[in-house]
Amino acid sequence: MPALVDLGASIIIQDSRRNYLFVTNLPEVWATEHAAVPTDISLFGDEVGAKLATLKDGITQSGNKGHIEITVGTEQVYEFRVQAVEFAKGGVYLVTTIVDRSEERHRERLLRALLREVSHRSKNLLAIIQSIALQTARYSGSLELFLHKFRGRLYSLSQSQDLITDSSWRGAYFFELVQQQTEKYLPENKHLVRVHGDNVLLSPNASLHLGLALHELIVNAVSHGSLLRSGRVINVTCTRKHANGHDALEVVWDEALVDRKPEGGEEALKAHFGSTVLERVVPVSVNGKAHYVISSDRISYQLVFPLESGGD
Image (cartoon, rainbow, N blue to C red; front, side):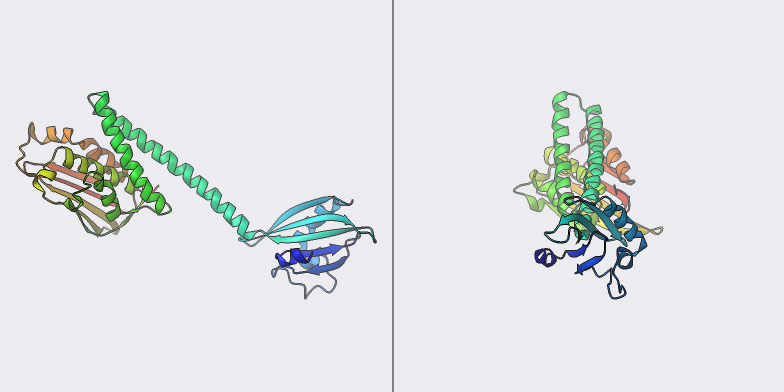
C-alpha cells in the first residue's frame, strides 16, 4: 500500500458497512477538512457518491472488483478501482484506489485526433493523385509519356508531403519548398534558381499544389529550356500582399530563354510544357489565378492566391 501512495494513488479502506476506516492522499479537488465523518457523498459530492454506491452494491464478496472513471471539469480524469478484500481478522473490506488518468486520457484524445487527421489528409492526397492521373492521361499521347509525367508528379507530391509531415502538418515554408522541388534537377547547378521575397508558411494544401507547379516549371526548364546552356539564373519570388481585407500571395517564376524561337506559337509550347497543371489544376486547387506566358526570350508564371485558401 505505501508503494501505491508513492506512485500518487489515493487509498480508501471501508468496512462491510462502508464506514471509512482509512483514507489518504486524496486528490486536491476533493478536500477532506470539511468532512467530519467521511463518506463517499461528503468527500466526492452527490453525483460521484451515487455512482460509487451503485458500483459498490455489486462488490460484496472477497475478490469482487470494479472500476469507474470520473471526469472533473474538462481536463481531469480519475479512475476509482474498488475491490473486496478479506483480511485475516475482521471479514471483508472494500479497498478503493484513486488514480489520476488525466495525462493518459489527454494522450489518447491526441492520438484519436491524430488518426482522424491522418485519415482526412490521406483522403485529400488520394483525391489530388486521382486528379493528377486524370489530367496527365488526358494530355499524354502515349502510355510511356503518361508514366513519365505521372511518376514525376507523384515524386513532387511525396517531396512536398515530407516537408508537411516534418512540420507536424502545419505546412511548408516557401523557400524550402522551392529548394526541395528544384535541387533534384540541378544537383551541380543549385545557384541557377534564386528565391526572393517573403518566406511564408504555406498551408498543407497550398504546399502540395505549389510544389507541383514548381516541379512542372523546373522540369520544363531543364528538359526544354536553355537553363543549363545559358547559365542564366531563374528568379522565383514570393510576395505577401494585403488587398480588400485579405492576405494573398503572389508567386512569380521568371526564366530567361536564349536563342529560342517558338515553334507553332505560344499555345503549342504551352501544350508541350504542361500548361494544364499550371493553368488549371494548381490555381483551381488553391482558389487562385494563374498567368502563364511563353515568348521567344522568356517563360513567366504568376500565381496569386489567398493565404487562407489551400487549407484542408
